[in-house]
Image (cartoon, rainbow, N blue to C red; front, top):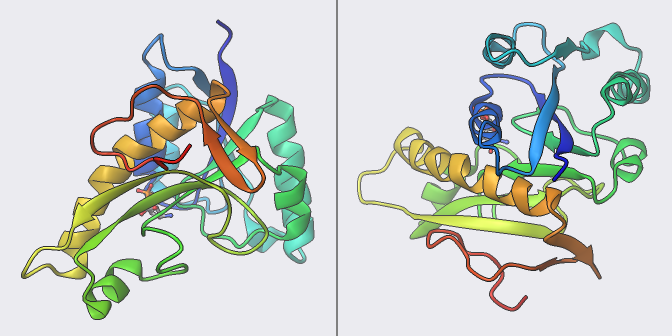
Length: 216
Ligand code: GRF
């Protein structure tokens, strides 16, 4: 079966991008990464993508006058590669409704918390401050509101005694690296479709560690 072309947008380390890249090496994975784009020229993830032979692009937001001009440039660059789905993987620019609506139901994000809890930054610090016992990550379709939109999948991890923001972040990140490829695969194979602002999943079995919506 033809693979779905995806673009991955990063701003930094790119470990989630790398998890997608590793997953995409499998013949059975339904997506191929056609381009990795960064808004920061110094993003370490760019070298990782290049080393894997993936096309990379830098669209430096500082070169543009305003968010829309930046997003228009980003959009035209992406279009050159013809992705059907765009995955945000540690992409640290807020996107305007112009962009998110243009890619409605085709734009996916990973966020390091169990949404709708802890939207925004510093999620691990805030989870520890709140004293939650369970934390995790969420993959969702993007809506104009930040860290909002139909949830494809979530993975939970325990908060353990003595955790620091760093130890908790590391545990969540490990879960992210499993969750993101699984959710991207579901989206690319048409098994995670948006219906009425929820994601309808067509899967027989869930990975044991994934808390996909059991009601779908
Ligand atoms: C991840 O925790 C992701 O959930 C968040 O930003 C971080 C990016 O890490 N959106 P990396 O660049 O994928 O390593």
